[in-house]
Amino acid sequence: MKKIIITGGSGFIGSNLIQLLLKKKYKVINIDKSAYSANPYNVKEFKKNKNYFFFKLDINQRTKIIKIIKKYKPLGIINLAAETHVDRSIDSAEKFIKTNIGGVYNLLEIFRKLKKITKNKMKLLQISTDEVYGDIPENKLASENNNYKPSSPYSASKASADQLIKAYGRTYDIKTLIANPCNNYGPNQFPEKFIPKMIFNLLNNKPLPVYGKGKNTREWIYVKDSCEAILKVFEKGKIGENYNIGSGIKLKNIDIIKKIFKIAKKNKIKIGKKTKIIYVKDRPGHDFRYALNSNKIRKKLKWKNKTSSNKGLENTFIWYKNNFGYFKKISKKNITTRLGLKL
Ligand SMILES: NC(=O)c1ccc[n+]([C@@H]2O[C@H](COP(=O)([O-])OP(=O)(O)OC[C@H]3O[C@@H](n4cnc5c(N)ncnc54)[C@H](O)[C@@H]3O)[C@@H](O)[C@H]2O)c1
Image 1 (cartoon, helix red, strand yellow):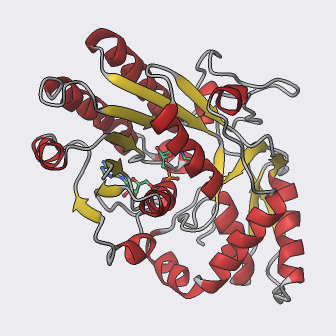
Image 2 (spheres, rainbow, N blue to C red):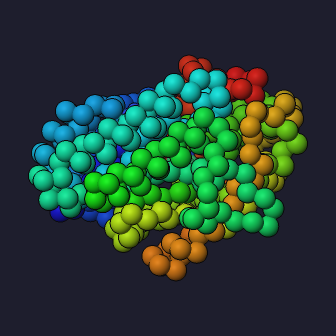
Image 3 (cartoon, helix red, strand yellow):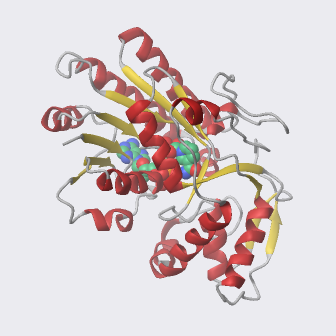
């Protein structure tokens, strides 16, 4: 049976990826420190699965992770453990540096130290982001050989990790790969991020805060499509290479809100009086546009995204509507936002 370690598996993309891996008959070892964005809710359904194992651990812990690798002998690690919210990185970057750079350094050192024992067969797939390429001008796309130009402490920490991955791959001949996905959306995402926040606020009769004029553009991929791409890169990607994961679907924030309103109407959700778009002061260093050239993964690894934005957004909306009670409970705890509004 194929065994794999997923770090950050209790978070948004990680939990969707574990669902896919269990379906594909992998034995999955989830290492996650259960930070605020990790929901026990996301992994509840796996607990009964005999092929799922969970370790509450920080990726900075070396000895325990080495023990786990020696015990399970996995094919490799897909690292999704990270601090992920740009707004939080602007308020305080420390945790971003510790996890997103320090944690990756620790995983690389583990790979280096275990090289003999693993016969250097283990792969490390680092999940990076399209944000490392920085602002992409209209009519341009970022391909894998674009320079890195991160704008926020978050994207700078991810870019630094990628450089470490490449350097360790070259210097110590470790089997590393990098995937750079665009913005993901779908079930299980912590509702401080844009799409779940808009859905949550709409369901909760709250205003919908949008940065600037709402014209910032992102490339959006449904998380299930993204997870299939991540697995493709892990299984078939060429060692030492980067793969962009983009859907080609680029939408302005304001367009997404309009789509969410349409879906709410279609599903006969009453729009409360307070649910109105409010424009708030832009965040510092806010990139205007991200857009990827994903020809490499499409041509070389024969991957393609399957979910339209209308279908993906409707699935997401319905999922949040069905799980609204849970998110209402956690929203009371610790959802802070630079947008000047509590969720
Ligand atoms: N969500 C997106 O749109 C998107 C897009 C591109 C890239 N990414 C990248 O994908 C990865 C996953 O993102 P996500 O949206 O699922 O994030 P998330 O915030 O939902 O989940 C992150 C997970 O990592 C865990 N974690 C944090 N610090 C840890 C540590 N020190 N040790 C162990 N576990 C730790 C958290 O508990 C959480 O379960 C991240 O690396 C992120 O940079 C995300």
